[in-house]
Each structure stands twice: as structure tokens, then as C-alpha cells.
Image 1 (cartoon, rainbow, N blue to C red):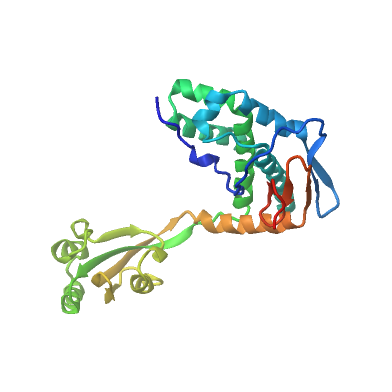
Image 2: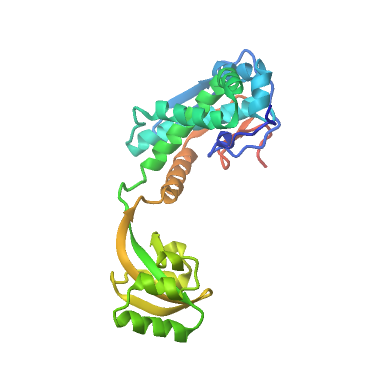
Length: 295
């Protein structure tokens, strides 16, 4: 039996919650109401929150495998509110959730869970926390949809480089002369380079130049293909460099994630959220339900 794991993906991206929790709230119609900038309204039924909370409360063994402690109702409500806000953000962006997004995310979640648990534990967790997991899946596919709205769909052109690393500028200059005289770059790198890529002809592959130290980066950005560059001094020594080709790699999604989150936050700030007092209050700055009023 494995020790109790805490599955990383369950840390909700938009939900940074530290909560002592609230008890079940009976006889409430709505746990929260939302008024959007265009005047339309939405709500989250208390029954929806409590259905998820009740399933967790009734499945101690599954909860013990998946969490350090059972998520309280205010955390569940926060996530449900965020799902509504994400839906409205997606509509405001004029985009849609892909038709296959739910099935693909279910496969991802199941793969993660199977990597954490044996077959018996997997079935216990997947069955005993199914409503909570479905809520997380709903949030994740909406977060991804917002992010994807800011992807350009275009790749990034990057240089393919190789280098010869030498200890002194004089040695590097001599290598440049030999290359100019017609010697093969890969052969010379294997012979002279003190760097770890020497045996592979000095090949660094094709990658975003921003991953290199500044001096190396500046030398290869916009460098003509096939031209010998150097010597270039860095903290590692003196480099003789050649951009031998270019390639296109997928764009980095981190910028799209930042832009998507900023758009979501701006949209969220224009929505009036009211939470039933039994669950806490809505913290506009944090974008979540808190048990105590924000100070």
C-alpha cells in the first residue's frame, strides 16, 4: 500500500485558497449569485455544492487517498463560481470549448490517477470522488480554452547551432582560421572542444536563443546560416559558433497563459458576486470565497 499521495493536478490553477472550511448549509436555495457586466445573472445552487461535499464526506477511504483533508464547502463553491466566470470569459472572447475537450481531459485525469494508484485504489478514488473530479475537469478545460484563445497558432523560428568551446581566445581564433581554411566544423569540434557536446560535433540542436547566456544569445540571434561566428566569450570560455540551420518549434504557451489569466481577471473584476453568508464572503481581490471577510 502506498503512502497517502497528494495529486499535484488537483491544485486548481485559479484557486489559491487557505480555508478553515464551513459546515453544510441547509435550506439555502442559492449558494452564490453573479451579476455580469451586461446585466445578465447567474447562480449556483446550494444543492450543487452540497452534493459534491456530501459525496466526499461519505467516501472517507477515497478522500484519504486523494487529499490531506477533505475540501471544505467554501473551496468547492469557489471552484464552481470560477467555472461560471470562465464560461462568461469564454463567451466574451467569442470562442468555444472544443467538442472533444471533456473526453480528452477525462483521459488525462485518469492517466494521472493511474500513475498514482493501483487498480483497486484507482477505482475507489474515481468512484468515491467522481463529482469533485468532474468539477476539476470542468475547470481545467475552461482554463485551457481561455489560454488557447491567446495562442497565435504559429510556430517560433529558432536557430540550430553548434559550437566549439575553448579555454582561451587565442585557441578560439586558431579554430576560426582552420574553419575558414575549409576544415569540417563537426570534426574540429570533436577534436578541440572542451564542452560536453564536442563528441557530437558541438551540436546544440534547434532551440529558442533566450535559453542561452546573454553573450551567446546575442551572437546567434539573426546570424546568417553557415557563417562562422566568434570568438565569443562567456562565463564558460570562448566559443566558435555556427548557425547551421533554422527550424520551427511550437510556441511557448506560458505567455498565452499569462495573457489569458489577465483577461479572465479583468473580466472577473467586472462581475458582482454575492455569496450566502453560511459559506463566507466573496473576496474580489483574490477571486475566491473566504470564511472571514477580507481585511
